[in-house]
Amino acid sequence: MTRRSNILLAGLLALAPLPASAHPHIFAEARLEVIAGKDGNVSELRNVWRFDDIFSSSVLMDFDTNTDLKLDHDELQEIAKTIRESLGDYGYFTFITSNGAPIPVGKPDTFTVDFKDNQLLVFFTIKPEKPLAIKGSLSFGVHDPTLYTAIDFSTDEAMAIEGDGFKSCKHKVVRPDPDEVIAQNQSNLTEAFFNDPAGTDMGKLFATRLELTC
Image (cartoon, rainbow, N blue to C red; front, side, top):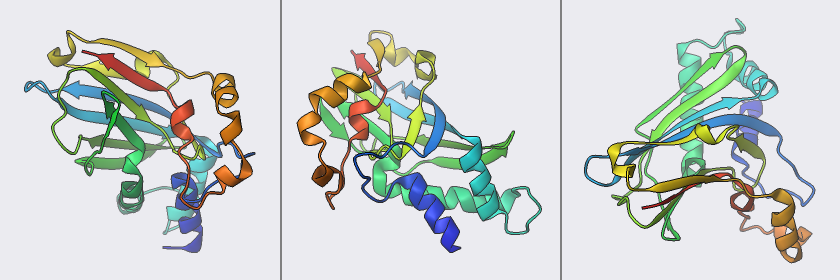
């Protein structure tokens, strides 16, 4: 893999803590579908990410190994493999809680990428690592913990539930107000905090999430 590719994907995965003045450098419009199984558990989560033109162009430049200004099957496969393996250390940017407790996810069953209309598209299906019952309070979110990548759900309908198992559940999309988040956490948002070698998870404070009460 080229040095530029390493830098590119390091940026995507936000591998380093950011200074307090940092802001997103990569933008993706997302869709999340949470699927109920017939056994009363969450079956899977289906993710679609569409990246911005500038980042997508960078991916094209770095992975177009035959320099034909297109991404062929093998090149797309290499992108998918690289992103899939790298995201594994970060829970695939997929965050679930059940009654407030974090629920880990397993490796994606499917992980593919495509390149259409000059934009990189990422598709993957993921499941809770262990059976997750559809009961109590559930929360589902997709975000970059360090805010380097902004994953945006442009409408509430972009976070959806599907399946009879959710019929008795109430659901809502929660969009935290950034000004309120900053005001409530001002004492913690120091340079030392952002430069903590253990990393931060500021993304969860700002991230849009889907909440269910069942």
